[in-house]
Length: 386
Image 1 (cartoon, rainbow, N blue to C red):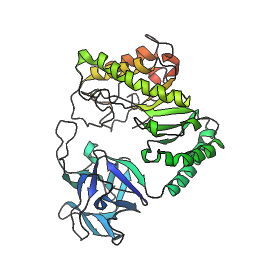
Image 2: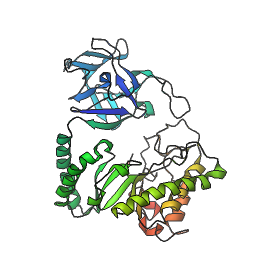
Image 3: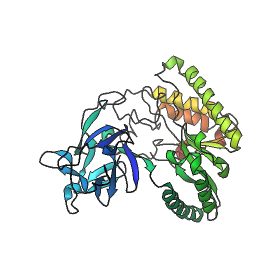
Image 4: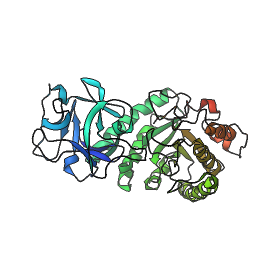
């Protein structure tokens, strides 16, 4: 895994990781299925370098761009070597001397959900295009959790002071830190919450990834249970005529779990992030970044939004939604937004569904006031970025 020093982290969204199966200079670096136990995938950022940490004895090997052979390779670390100087910017990794080039998996993307071969693919540098195979996402697995919690608490106390200064209504103390949600971390989180409350007087929450919310044992110490609500509503694409029934049945089961969580901790529940692409089969895995190589289906997006409001908006414990990238203030450099198959619902049928629910056209008791973005024109303000 790519890692910042002291961590071990996956970074590619397709669960592929940089891998090198040797220590000699010139060894090709490739991409293969992520395996946390595989030392060939253990790397860390140190300054501008990405160092291999395959073994404790070999620590002076770096990710290197061979301009002659146009390949990524392993080579002795040299601080002044521009072929070993990397920059992490958002979801992209650039060679510092060529910011127009992005670290990527070499290959062609077919018009399907994924595109990787099952085993491995070459890693390369190529012109940055904002496509999926150039984007990297981090999932942390920390070797020293005591140190991590100490640093994270210092970090959050600083943000808590800032939140108090600007009179923020709510502060999230973390988001999808899945490996730190087990009961063994309970005391550390409670200690952090107590420290934050000393400097911040507003509401506190934490954003759990969908399905992991039951792992959190310290919801009682917070004010709101927050979940990134990208739940799957079907294992397969659902025909348009059957969506209403299938989605409602799926939400009925999910809602039961959410209500049980509310009843256990007696806290309101909100979705800290949610969005649906206006593309085919978005109900299978709503959070999947499918690139632009999908079939447009704006009706599917509208039906998914309608099912969400219909299932949760009427529940007395459900307190609101933060829309991810609704499209009113989107970044034109992001191909997922402002596109026919993007997550945004602006100027699509989904927008009318949101207006109907949030502006009171078909408002159940809690829909108009409980949603954090009451007026659809304010959605871009009351939403999180990707």
